[in-house]
Structure formats: C-alpha cells, structure tokens
Image 1 (cartoon, rainbow, N blue to C red):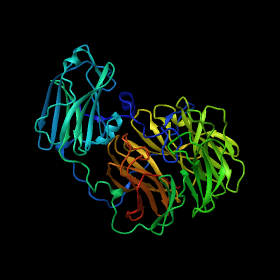
Image 2: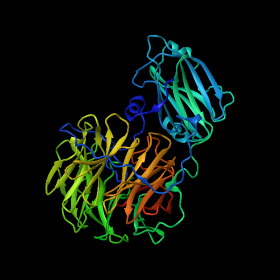
Image 3: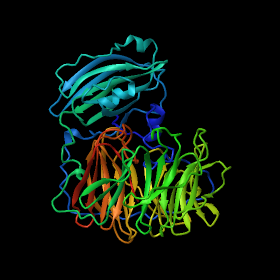
Image 4: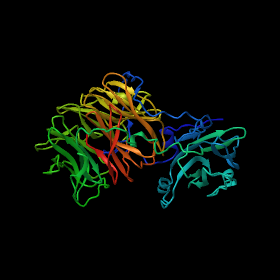
Length: 571
C-alpha cells in the first residue's frame, strides 16, 4: 500500500488553485510570497542551529498505533506528477473500525493510463462554501479529495458520479459526494465532518482503490493551543504595546487599551520610536477604503499619546512599511510610484523633523522595493521583487545600493526570499523558500548577505521577533495544513542553544510578534485564511487577541480581546 505523504507547495500549486496566504504587495501585516532570485554565485555554507533545550512543558500524549499516519496535514496519494489518468469507479464501500471510519473507492484503470493520484486537505465548511461561492450556512468541516487529473472520458461517465453518496453506519463522516470540475478533467470527493478529525488518504493495490480513513476522535481540544492558554503566574508588561486594529492605532498600557486615532481616516501601518517619542503611520485619505490597494495614503507622525498628528511625506500614491532609525531621527517607508498595476514600490527615508524624502535605488530598474529595516543609523536592508518573479534583498547606505540576496538562491537549495527582519545588533533574519517546494527555512545573515545560520526544522520556519540582546524568536510549523497549525515557539540566544517556549495545535493562527524586554507580545487569531499554515497571514475575519509571554518563566497572559483582527504590532 502506498501511504500518504505531506504535500509540497509546488505540487499543491500545480494541482489546484488556492488563495495565497503570503501576498506579494508590501502591506504592513502580510509577507510577500518568496519568488525566484537571479543566479549570480555560490551560497555560503550554513551553520545549523543546535537542538533546542525545552522549558518544562505539558506532557505530549503517546501516539496511538492504530492511528499511525492520521493527521490534519494536507496529504497526497499516488504520484502527483503522473499527469492525467483514466479510471472508472467500480465500488464504493464504507467500513467502521474501532477508532476510525473508512471510505473506499474501487477503481478500474486501463493499461494505457497512469495510476490515479489525489490531493487531500481539510478546511472549515464555511471556508469551503466561500471558496466555491455558496452561502456560508454550513457548520462542521470539509475533507476534500481532489482528483484533478481524472479525465472526463467514457470510463468517467460510466462511474456513478452524484452530488451525494449513500453511506452506511458512519458517524464521523456525516455525508459524502462528488463535485465535477468544468472542462475535460477533474473531480473532487467532498466529505462533511462534524469535527476537525485527523485523516489518512492512500492508494491501495490488489485491487486498486482510493482509501480515505477518518478518525472518530478529534486531535484538537480546548487545551491544545498553549499560546492561547493563560498560565499560572503573571507576565509583566515592561512597556506600552502599540497595535493596529480595525483601521485605528491602539495603545495597551497599565492594564487598558486606548484608541489613539479614533477618526474617519484609516491607518494601515505603524512604527514606534521611544527615543523620539513618536509614532509613524500610514493613513488612507478620508473617504477611501483600506481594502482598496490603489487608495491614496501618506506617511504621518504623532506623539505617543496620539497628539499633534501631522503629515510627514507623500512622495507616491500609497504608503506602507514605516520603520524608525535607531536614533528616531528618520523614518524609512515604502511608497508606490503610481496607480498602475502591478504596483511598483520604492523605498524612501525622510527626517522626522521634516524635509524632502530621499529615494533608495533606481526608480527605473526592474525592482519593486519594500519592507525596509534599519541595521544601524546609516544602513537599511529591504526586500525587492521583479515582475518576472525574481526576488532578493538590497542593502542601502549613503546613496549606494548593494544586492546581498541573489547569491542565496543559486543552486538547488532555496528558490526565493521573503521579507527581512533586522536585529538591533545588525543581523538579518529572512524566510527562504525551499527550491523543492517543501516550505521554508529560516536564515540569519550578516549585513553582506553571508549566511550565519539555518533553521530548517519542519515545514515552515518563520522569524517572529528579535530581542534587544540579539535573541531570535521563531515559530515552526510541522506541516502544510489548510485547517490547523501545529507549531512550536523557540528563543535562540545570541550564544548557546535555543529554548522551546511553547507548542501546540490551533485552528486559528498567529499574527505579528514583538519583543518587549524579557517578554514577547503576540497576536492570536480565532480564524486564519484557508491556506497552508506557516507564513505570516493576517486574518480577514473573526476575532483576535493580544497576548504576552514571559520568556524566562514561560508564563502567558491575555492582554486584550479585540473585536476584529489585529493587523499589526509596532516593532
């Protein structure tokens, strides 16, 4: 029997079209999809991080041997590179075992055809309804088995393909049916589940059949997600926390949240400088929608209490990604040149005291530049992407610009780079999309682009935040899943072994993190976009909450319950 395996991003993109959780445009809260960078030279040899030391954490239940291979991960059965196939469904049977239920499709395949293949993923029934354009009244979860290569030939038409299938004795599987794609190939087997149940999909031989097995008990409970479980003991808040919620800038301090920009205008990005006692932010002009990517916005500044707001710069049509220099005297930001699409971004700096913005890099080359981060008072690192999907990192200093990212994507290791995250000590953390399509590793670089280390555990490794002492916080995701994120949060000190701070599985997701003294503030979402979990993806619906974890003691506390998604935390 051929078992199920984790689906790669490359296979998923080839087999089905999904909404990408990682956007290309430089918004204040979402990460652009890493893309292929030019070939220019060899990649430096990485230093692998040591195995982490774990804080005392709750015990992990022993795995059940009867449910080996069951998970909420996206799965593939057969060879997804096999191409189109011809098949007839000969039998449909259900079996109820002690710990799972089984649905089998007997298949007849002619000798002239390749074997069938399928992609399986689970998502909420509401997300499924939204994707196929149906009213969102369904409860439960949809387990979708996509057979995109199934030819609509005589054998297909000889199969009993109906919107509903008769099931016998199943309770975990509430209902099942087919969806037939337009065109000359493709069908989907849709199973409705009442709970988020682990599953296993495989292609069995002798006789040939597609086997879908669903566990009877869920793998997720109210206590599965450590980062949304308050713990005994307090997590002291060392400084005010500034965040973006529902188009306004809020401050949490002294146990309460205060709206600093309660006005008709919409704020879309923010940065804070304690030394300058200023907040820099992007504000959309009055009457425009923040969802309109072409809406005019400008860079503003105001006091830490929300007082004395004034426009600082508007060199382009749209503003994004503000970042204060370490001394608080300048702000770097991204701005578009015009309303033409695709949007073309440039990176600018402007004195907080006022003056004309200065552009970094050429306005007429192939690169769209965004996500600036200060390495020190004079140097910036920022992301760049070309229309042909190449991506890189640039270092800008004293009017000059250096490509420091292109060499990293040479060879067969990394395909492209994400947005940089700069350390107060001058190091750079960046996601590197693996060339084989199996997620992303986390690289740390020096200012020249030389690789200092690689963290490659699991499907996706995302940089969360840098501490003032050079500690790097990062979040790993076990596998690609459209429904749940099985994660672990680590702290990597400048010297020594990483420490695991928390782990768990959530049906929601996590927004931005920011280090505050010996604590880490973060955003938890009750709902996350229905796409492979791992990259930063800001929720577009549902509630969110602001949390704080004491990184020394591991204690966690909820600070704020927000009525809508918190789009960003001020770095």
